[in-house]
Length: 168
Image 1 (cartoon, rainbow, N blue to C red):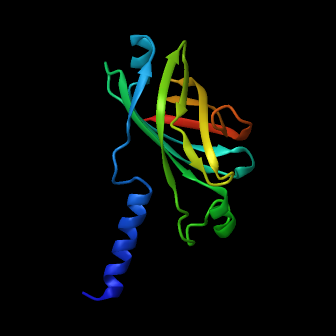
Image 2 (image 1 turned 120 degrees about the vertical axis):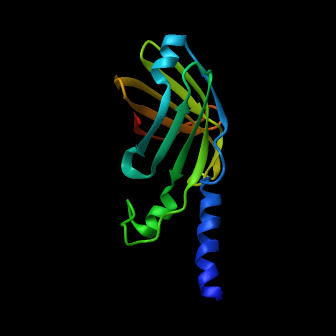
C-alpha cells in the first residue's frame, strides 16, 4: 500500500479523534420532576450560531426514559478558522476543525430547559470560558433558546447566540 493511500485514512482518523467522533460523550446529570424529564427523553440533535456568525456548530443530547443521567456534547467551530475558509465553509472547501465540548448539567422546569457546558479553553480570547444555555419546548419534539459564553468564572460575556434541537 502506498503512502498516498494511507495518509488520507490516517488524516481522517486524526480528525475524527480531534472532533470527538470516536469518543463517547460524558454523562450529564439532569434535574427536574419525572414528568419534565420524560418530556425531554429521546435522542436530540440541533445547531447553534453565535450572533455575528463568529461561531457555529452542532449539538447532540440523549436521555433514556426514566433516567436521570443523559449524554450530550457540542461541536464548536471557531472564528479564526472561519476567517481562513469563509463563513460558513463551502462544501468544496476543507471542513473546519471542531472542538467537542461536554454538556455539564441540564435542568428542566415548567417546559424550560437550562444548562451549562463544562469549562473549556476559548481559542478567540485565549482564556477559560463557561457557557450557559436556556430554552423552551416549542413543540413536543422541538426546543430552542439562547446561550451566552463568558470568561470563567464570572467574567464578561464573550459571545451569545441562538440554538435549536429536534427529537428524532
